[in-house]
Each structure stands twice: as C-alpha cells, then as structure tokens.
Image (cartoon, rainbow, N blue to C red):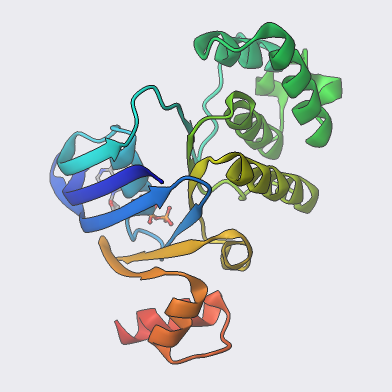
Length: 235
Ligand SMILES: Nc1ncnc2c1ncn2[C@@H]1O[C@H](COP(=O)(O)OP(=O)(O)OP(=O)(O)O)[C@@H](O)[C@H]1O
C-alpha cells in the first residue's frame, strides 16, 4: 500500500530553485527506502521538499491517507535548552495525544535500549552529539508514525545504538510503517533497504533493489558501495 508519493519537478532555495529536479518515487507501507548520493547531490533538499521546508517547490508531495502521522528526524538535533530529556518526550506525547500509560512504557523501553535512562531528567544541552542524536531518534520512534522521514541518522551513533536503531526500524516496518532514510553508510543501507534511490547532481540516477542495481551495473555480486562508485563513474 502506497503511503507517500513524491513528484518533484524542481525544488530548492531562493536563488537556487532547481537544486533538485525530476525526483519521482513512491514509498510503500512496510518498506524501507534508502536515499543515497554524493555530498551535495540533493538528498537533504529532497527530504526538505517532502516535509515542506523549502521556499521553492514545483511538484506534488502526496501523503496518501488522511490522518496518517509522519515523523521527521533531522540531520542536526533540534532540542529545547529549557526542557529535560523526559520533558521532550512528554511534549511529543502531548502533541500526538498518546495514551499516558503507553507513553511511559514505550519511553522507558526506548531509554533503556539506548542507554539514556540515567540521564532522563538531565538537559540535552549537556549531552554529547551522539546522545542528542539518540534523543532525536527516540522521539521519532516514540510516536510510532505511519511514515518516517529520516535524514542521515547513523552519523554520531555508536555501533550499539546503530544496531538498536536498525532493530527498531525492522519492528516498525513489520508494524506497517513506511520509512525513507538518507545515508552515506552504504554498508548499512545494503543491509536494511528494500529499495534504493541514487541521486547525483540534483537528479535521480537510478532506483531499485540491490539486485536490480547490480544488474544495471553488470556487477552481479558487487556491494552497494561498488555499484554506487561504478554508476557515478559512468554517469
Ligand atoms: N540553504 C541553501 N541555500 C542554497 N543552496 C543550498 C542550500 N542548502 C543546500 N543547497 C544546495 O543544494 C544542493 C543539494 O544540497 P543537499 O544539502 O540537498 O545535498 P546532500 O545530498 O544532502 O549532501 P550531503 O551528503 O553533503 O549532506 C547543493 O548544491 C547545495 O549547495
């Protein structure tokens, strides 16, 4: 079942309206799609276009069903200095009208899994970058939305937190969430993505599952890393 349909003719910034062009894809329930591409390719711009954060957008972004929830986990943590970790979670729970008992159960579980229980009443301003990133991830996972849009989530996460996050994303897929993730971690993308979208120079270069991308490169057993470099060399 389609949960998100992206049809971007062009999108960008004032003075740079066409930072990305002709990006068309759909995201299905229970699927994880990876957005990959070199630095400056247009991954974050595509994500910002989807969540309506850009001054310039020609095209259509369609969340397929009314009342569906969406969580955006940005590349840079966005946190309030005057709220503790726990108060951040309470704020999100209130915004999404979560059941109080379920909120407490899910929050405690997530804090335990990400090793943040001991600092739940601390202010995130005193956290390391990785701890702040974990808090952003927890806020997204807390509300269990229908659609996740996640910009470069693995940078700053330690291997243990990365593994927990991957496991929780698998659970969310099984629950039926559609997940879009931009990342440079091609080894992780290869492991977790059902489909991959490669963007270069603001344009969609290829999309498909790893098998299809390997076929396109004529590299039958290659890693996503090797396919990525091969496609970009020949583009
Ligand atoms: N605020 C902005 N104003 C003008 N141009 C911008 C702005 N942000 C990004 N761009 C331009 O848009 C293009 C795409 O940038 P974007 O941040 O989407 O790339 P990316 O694929 O996410 O890169 P990275 O992997 O380095 O994060 C680049 O040419 C960049 O210079």
